Length: 294
Image (cartoon, rainbow, N blue to C red; front, side, top):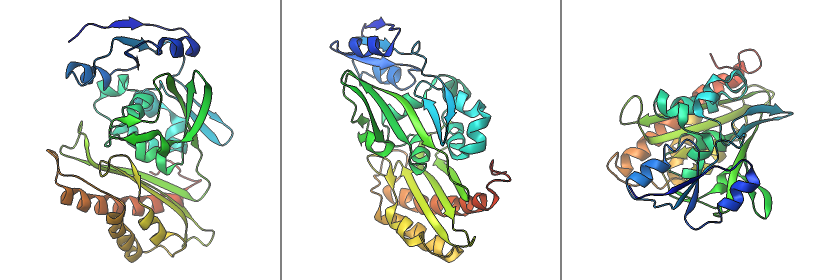
């Protein structure tokens, strides 16, 4: 492993200034970055340690849950607020690596690594989350979906930091679910992952709104818009769910690799979306009384 320097800023402004250095990259948990350095995929000259910037927080602000980019997946899982109000994010967090990895890995790092199979992304996308980014030219906010530019690429400039994820609280009558299929039952990268958010209309039987997102089936997380269109405004039924799940094929572009063939990923996408829709619909019926989904 080649030598590099480590810098420890005490403020976001100082961190942004340090990131102007040639070969400087931010580091928090380092679970993705250090592996890339070890494999010589990345060759940083400077690691800018952002763990002292106070970005590890979870708090509610009116109709949003604010998740600091330095918040670990273990902290998300330990949060009663998350499990009560945005259970789908807790489900995604629980699927990330091992206990040791979740104690180190941060939600900001998981998103900025931009790995197509990242578990947090689909869950946050169906919640219509926003990314708050700080840069030397000031802050900007963008839809989380717009953060990703390609495999392991984001739209962030070198002198920008993702500092917070803003998650809208789902309205009453909403249920959500995250599911993942890997080569092993635990500690496995996703072959396919999927998240669904569905809202019942006041009549209790019509799909008022729905969002479906998948990972590991395209260069970036994708919304299954064809499936959403098939569901929206229609009475919920097993037949409708099967039709919508089959429509997912029109929104994904899976590849074959060492973990799965493209055809297997298409089949898994259909199955996971079908199961997640049923679970999310069930949770929507329970919303308000048992929002934890149990």
